[in-house]
Length: 320
Image (cartoon, rainbow, N blue to C red):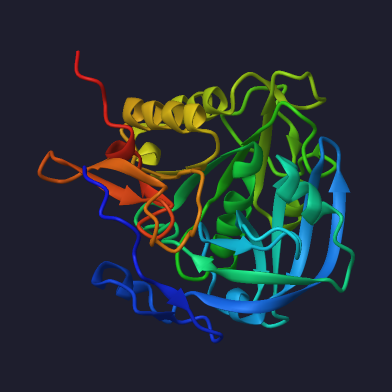
C-alpha cells in the first residue's frame, strides 16, 4: 500500500479537528484536548504507576477500550498513548495504569500532584458487549489489564440491562499493580490453585483470577490464555453459547487468545497495542492489515479505526 503522505490536520483549543481529510471527519468533535490536573500518582512494584487526572471532557466521553494521549513533561513534545482504566464522569477524573518504558514515561512518573498534564482523548473505538452473550470473559496481560478493568466496571454498572456475568483473567510476570488476595467469589471450572483476585473487582462482585509463571501465591501457574481455555473447557454447550471474549495485552497473548476463541467457537474482540505518533489518524503510522468480509486485506489505523478489532480479522486462522 502506498503512503498517501502527511495529512493536514490540526486540533484547535477546544479539541476539535480542523482541516481533516474525509476519512477523519467521523471523529470530529469526539476527541478533546484539555489541560488535566494530576490528582494522584501511586507507585507499584515493577515501575508501575496508577495515575489519576482531572480531565472532565475525556471522562465524560470515554468508553471501555478507548485511550488518552498524554504529555509526559513540558520538555518532551511527543505524547504517549495510554489505555484508560477507570473514569468517574461525575467527578471528572480518569485513571491510567502505566509501566515505565523509556524516558517519556519515566518523566511522567516524576510529575507531582497538581501538575498540568495535557490530555488528548478519548480516542478509538472501544469494546462492544452483546447482551445475548452475557458470560463475558475478559483477558488482560500486563499493561493490557486497564481496559479489562474499565469494561468490567461498565458491565457491573449495567447489570440491570442484562444478565452480565463478567469473569476477568489477568496475567503478569512481574508483581501485579495491586495487592492480590483470595477471592470471595466462587468460580466453577477454575483450577484449585487459582484463588487470587484483584480486590477492587472482588469488592464490585466481579469474579477475577490471576495467572503467572512467577510463582505468586494463589495464581494459576501458566499463561493467562491457558487459564481461559481451562475455564471454557469446563462449560456445557449451552453455557458456551453465551460466552464472548475480550482481550488486551502483548501481541503474542492476543494471538493465543484468538486461537482459544476459535477452538471453543466463541466471538472475540481484541485491543491492539501499537506504537503511535499522532494517535488521531493523521500519520497512519500505526496501520495494520485487517481482513475484510470479502476476504481482502485493508490497512486500518489502530488509533481511530481501533484499537478494538474482531480477533479473526487481525489474527486470521492460518491455512493448513
